[in-house]
Length: 133
Image 1 (tube, one colour):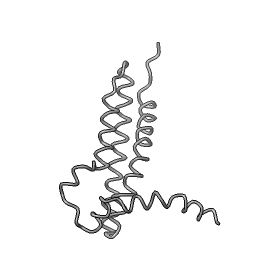
Image 2 (cartoon, one colour):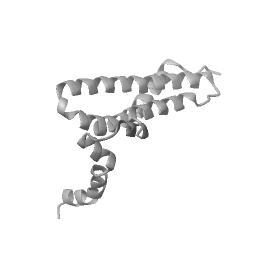
Image 3 (cartoon, rainbow, N blue to C red):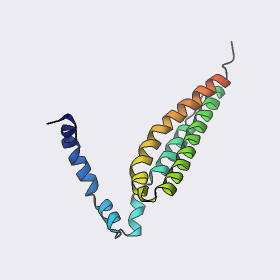
Image 4 (cartoon, one colour):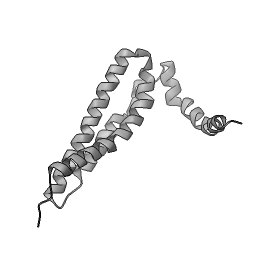
């Protein structure tokens, strides 16, 4: 058995569970009741709540709070760029909306938030120097 077939065999139960989930099946058939959407939190809302939670954490020093603010701005900018990219992709490839919404967008968003936050913090560290004692 090849390595890729071995990996596929390991991942197959996970894929089957996702593809046979009642929400996904009803969504694919177009028979999902609108009230069911209340039980599934959109991933973008979850990402925004994570950013707000991070921004609400108390900081002892004003410098740390300013650096955190720039870090959150970097993460927010990353989310805006990702949203713009998603809209362009939907316009260019209308058939790929499901893959974008349920696979690529959550994965890339999850990866881009800490990267954007980290870049914002690095820029803040360069711009906002710690006062010398």
